[in-house]
Amino acid sequence: MRTDMLIGGEWTAGAGPVFPSYNPATGEVLAELREATEQDVDAAVRAAAAAFASPGWGGLLPAARARLLLRVADLLEEHTDELARLETQDQGQPLNVSAGFSVPNAVEHFRYYAGWVTKITGVTVPLSVPDVDYRSRREPVGVCGLITPWNFPLMILVWKLAPALACGNTVVIKPAEQTPLSTLRLAELIQEAGVPAGVVNVVTGGPDVGRALVRHPQVKKISFTGSTQVGREIGAECGRALKKVSLELGGKAPSIIAADADLGAVLQGNLLGGLLNSGQVCAAYTRFYVDARRHDEFAHQLATAAATLRLGDGLDPDTHLGPLVSAEQVEQADSYVALGKKEGAELLTGGERPGGELARGFFYPPTVFAGVRQDMRIAREEIFGPVLTVLPYEDPEELAVLANDSDYGLAAAIWSRDIGTANRLARQVKAGTVWINMMQGLDAGAAWGGMKASGIGREMGWEAITAYTEVKSIWTSLA
Ligand code: NAD
Image 1 (cartoon, rainbow, N blue to C red):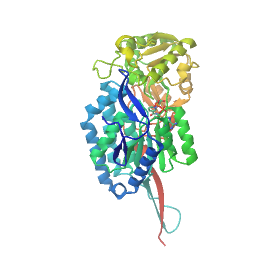
Image 2: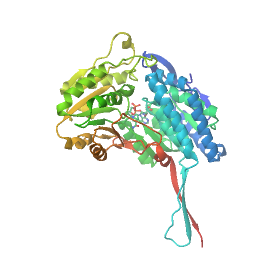
Image 3: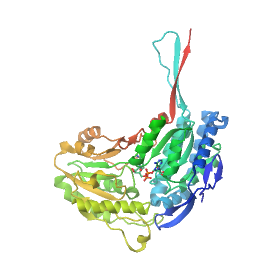
Image 4: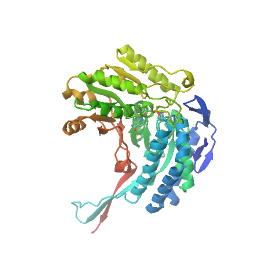
């Protein structure tokens, strides 16, 4: 298992303090790593800057760069089982999530962006200026700092890394301190694929390492996924330095269940949509708006179904829900449950840490609150755990207002048998992504990102190409 950092093509142990990465299913230390120092970050950024300027990368023809990305995709795919097990052990997600979703999604992203490498075009425009020819071209930005969270460590990294490399940038990655292992293994496979030294660098550690990367003057762009609070800090720092920045931040996705929805049919989608990866999903469905006359029926069905899900080690094939990533996340879920009770919401299931075998890991059971009001903090703040809130509504005309009454705007779900109602709501809801009659779906081709406090910019699709390139206008005199 790789635990050292990759700087300029060399694996270096670093001299900073040691920090542990835990297996959240057992609470045991899985690996020990070193916190990068300012000098390590500086060395990684300088290596990336040198690689950016080198003919070995900058001079590579697009078709050759595309082939490299395809080779990375193939290697990732060949190592699916190994990477999935590593992700499950470090992050906690059940194997069916890591092997069935996280790693395949990362593979697809590399393939998708390998396809873009030879299609990154500029435009020619007929200017109203005599005797000139005008064209634009898209150029890579330079060294990009990629800072990732712990909930889908490999997949979210690749959402950034694949387009950054496709556009010809070089990168310094700072994985979340809780879950660095799949990132290091991916970096090793990238080396094996033949990506030149210095193009991809990894520094490990916590917030201070991220700060050093954001502040470094040779980093031309930061792509960050994480909490809104940290996103604000990074955005401010990048604003001062006039650095490009993309921010993928928190969410509190509403799931709007119209009066005509078939409750039986929507139950499964909402259960999975709320509890995938134990609710540690930025787009998790967490606020369920249900017609007041059907509120009790839906809330009880949801709670009954949630209570049947089996908690366990993600490596166990019978596990439905793995642990939360850390003791802090368990604390957070627990404190929101206490708050929900205090606020007067009705706890239907969950809300207590499990005992026995599971007590040594960071487990929390699926928890459902009914009779939740819009002004309660459990309905307004991101819990990032398996805590679901059901809110009754009286007037369907108010649904969009209720859904939009949130700081966040990452995603929303709408359930209705009436295509007109569903699409009208989809237009009204302020969210970067709306899913109609389905649980969350993701595809490299579909733009991803948030409105309001959920972020700035978009990943995936052509949008990610624009995020990792600068447009240059070139004028030529024909006179
Ligand atoms: P976090 O903000 O605490 O940390 C994210 C990363 O930033 C980590 O690598 C961390 O070490 C680093 N970091 C922390 N402080 C920093 C600073 N001041 N400067 C630079 N780097 C810093 O978030 P988290 O707890 O790891 O992740 C959970 C959050 O991420 C949730 O809010 C969730 O909604 C959000 N998220 C959003 C998306 C999305 O696509 N919008 C996807 C996944 C997670």
